[in-house]
Length: 414
Image (cartoon, rainbow, N blue to C red; front, side, top):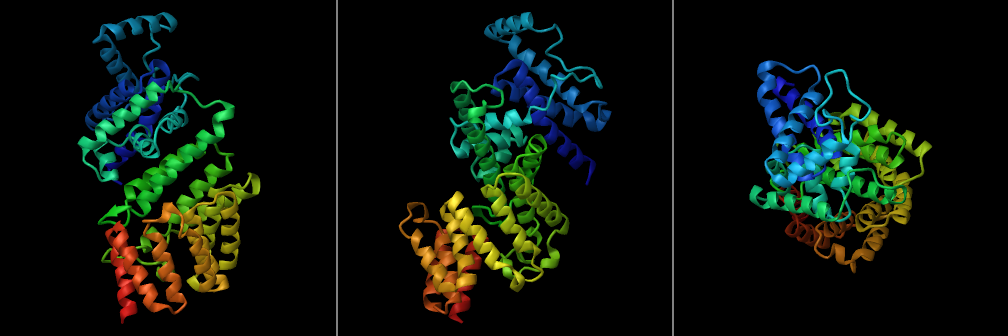
């Protein structure tokens, strides 16, 4: 890793911590974030030339706080707020402590920032965008690329999300006990969405968005560090690691999608598999069972099989049946149908798929005809499978998936 890459990783890790300090002291998400971005830009410019400061976090907090004070002094209303705040705090409260002199109040507020960005007043799409911007440290241009929209479109979208958080009266603090479970579920869901969009890009020429999967894993690691005893946080991190371990073998040299059963398993990341398997094993033995743990356990069964034909499909079918009861959704049913087909025969899997035909959430989704085509192919119904592969290809906006589905249809023509 080059020096510039190491610096980028350090700044990305420190950005949410510095933003949390400013939010806790001053409030105002938009103003604080602008100040942090200026401090990060100053660091990226000065540190390579002048060397890394003894306490990079304190340096950033100090510079960002001064930028914020400058902003406050530029408007009379904010000057009044500054005076009021100064009356409540010590004279140097707005500045970072000297290096090596961190006080208990200078804690890592990344967890509180995650909860703020995933406020229930926001739509899931806005939660994802704001999390990537404020917690992930991505620029607005980078977030726009993740959503495949122009920066000019994304900038006002993020601004509206910040305004909605402010209008909702959201406090920069961890939620109350009675709100905790629901708010944590929202945070986990946002991280899950970020990872999934990176692992199988919803549209565009590339199958993977490695920047998004890496960011989702990094943020989930931070969350796990703050909540080490939460089984679902551990389960989500394990699921991401076990899934990402297969990424090197998911595409061929030409970028074409390689199905799980046909992947070269020697290319899978053994270290990620070992870490993910250990996480989910510990979580399932010590915490109440949840959907992310179950999905991680299923992923572990897939990656621990030395060959595709060694996969324990019966155990996977049982786990999907449990998952269908505690967290039912169409995607779970799709995967459950595959497991049923592998253990009870393709006709049984097709019967389960038919329960989704009337589900409006699947009306235009490409995965339903894609899975149906796969099971029809297993059942020897080649003409029907060919038509469903082509239907799925028309519905997907991912070019690698479209090419793969059309290739499967063409193979049946042959």
